[in-house]
Image (tube, rainbow, N blue to C red; front, side):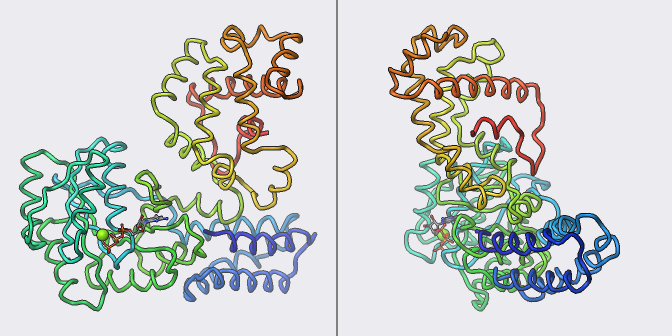
Length: 450
Ligand SMILES: Nc1nc2c(ncn2[C@@H]2O[C@H](COP(=O)(O)OP(=O)(O)OP(=O)(O)O)[C@@H](O)[C@H]2O)c(=O)[nH]1
Ligand SMILES: [Mg+2]
């Protein structure tokens, strides 16, 4: 999503970084280029202006101009300001209300409300361990209520039975009493797509909001529509007073302007982002991580979280237990490799790593790709049961045999054994609760990818 902006900023910064010292003029022209890059990324004009105004005094301050690495300091200033306009800290949905806590999803047609309702329901059920009920109030589009029902049933989410011809207000009342009866902690209301000029539809949201005393009125906005999404947010906010925003299609090739402008223009935080069509494709919106991603510093925390989410939880648990018992074997590693493949292969992983644009060439040399996973799979499958359970027994002659069996060079066997050792070391550290710092790739993970 932010690729173009990242590339532009990278080239502006590399120019600034090359200069051993910077004068005011050079900084000024760098700032102009940054402003241009923001505008090209579809950032709203007042936001781009404010951005530059905020960083200017810091960037042309004596401290920078006199410092030994002025370019690097400007990167830091830009990073801080990006975090600032993105909203500083992640904010969780507000569960602080008398149950059933109601969340109301509103937005334009096709912005992703129904999909997001189901994603949120699953996430809140699993992560927050709450009983969630889904309710569709979309009586306007044919089969809209069925669409939510099918999604909910497929994912074992409680949903309010459909009663033909009932109006949204009556459905809402029925939902509230059903939630009290079935003990739901949270109700997520999916509403029909509407535009800000449709007064009747807007009034309906206000009524439902009052009726449910909703703790959140969330605008679901399509990030691909850029500034249109931002204007829609502004209008919706003035009609119904939103509490937060969820941006969808952040996986698409939008230019990032919506994400960067929303908070500043509406004053309302983006709390989650939709990153795909599948039910689990939803993530908390972390300003710091997005800023890091934009500046090409990657996002190791998201990476690790994605890994944890995509991995089969049971297998992970098993691996942890095996590790505790000192039983982490080549079979466990084989499982991990297969899970990695499931995670969207290396490309999915790499797109979240620092400086990826520059690293593509390096990656080729280090042959970090799916071939590596496949060849490691072949190697492990050529080991005997004893060797897989206790790799320490793999002597020189055994390495030769395994190499022959799997059709690879002995050096690959050595490499894999080294990776295996690193992997077990890393897992031992992680199981001791050692935290991975944000914005930096731990050597353990880098080494493992090599
Ligand atoms: N790639 C991607 N697709 C998404 C995302 N969120 C929703 N979609 C897709 O967008 C399309 C429309 O989504 P819906 O959830 O039906 O949108 P809606 O706002 O409920 O639409 P209406 O009820 O007609 O107003 C579907 O094909 C979804 O799969 C996302 O984050 N990424
Ligand atoms: Mg819908």
